[in-house]
Amino acid sequence: MKHFLTAALGVALLAPASFAQQLVFDSFNRPDSSDLGFDWAEQNGDFVIQNNFGKGNVPFANDTWMNHTAFGQPYESSKVRMEFARDSADFFFGAGLVLGLDPNTWSGVAVLVQDNDLDGLFDRIFFHAAINAGAWFSSPTPILYDFPTPIDAGQLTVWVQDSGDLAVARVEDTAGNLIGTYSAQGIVGTPFAPTGVRAGVWVRSRPFINDFYALERRALDAYPKSISVASGGEQTLDITLESARANDVYFLLASLTAADPGTPIGGGINLPLVIDPLLLWTLTSPNTAPYANTFGTLDAVGHARARVTLAPAAVPALVGIDIHQAAIALDPVTFTPTAATNSAVLSLEI
Image (spheres, rainbow, N blue to C red):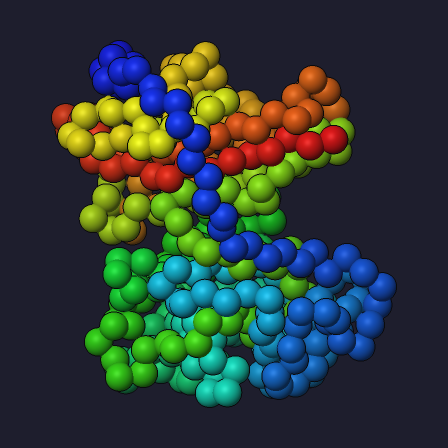
């Protein structure tokens, strides 16, 4: 398979491609406060800053939510992510995200992870057509899933795909282990499809939230966009190729140069990267540090998550370099290309 891909990549076209992607981030790393501050609008309940975390501040299951006023994208092209954790003194709590949010109606694609059995752990995920709507669009009851392993903290990512009809949520524990990828269909067929453009956070009781991202979703999302070479860090690379590409094989590749329209790889598909030693290394050495999970099988919704991690001060000479990354999907039987993503950059800074 690797020999086929190396041959198929051909000669690169050298014209660079760069398009701005809307992305907002909040680490909540600021002094304790009775509100979340700039760029946040509290719509119901109360949030505070405590010990460099955002935190719900209304006890026992009351709904508290806010939206990020600097982000504006239709629900079909939005992705939101945050870390969440329980307060050890709390019970019957939940932490969730909303995209396509209309602050006036509370409507949007709302996904909540919750302590459902009062054991002090997050153990269930709910999909809603609005904050506290109680139902998933045209369904008579909420769509929900129980976690195989309850957790006291983790990370939640939510997006919509398949022409705006399928909501998807990815849940990981604090070590980055996948708890599950969950989905709910039926957005387009309802008369109450999301009309807002905000991204929001929704909590019940007093859980902690941290490292909030809202971004314009693409086939390949890479965030944050930069890593400090001195401090080190991690970039998440989300491959989202729709349910039609479920169970395809994928490669995440990297190059020092992007290309537009790209390098032909067969089937009328162009890879938006230039062939260089870095690209050949990522092709022939998949899943090798500093990268992880760059080769594998897309899941049932055509998604996979890779990462690139740099240790502090690992290679000082990397400062100022941009690494361009893109993914390709392959038929699992014939290994012929079926899709390629956009390119996404990693900027290495001081």
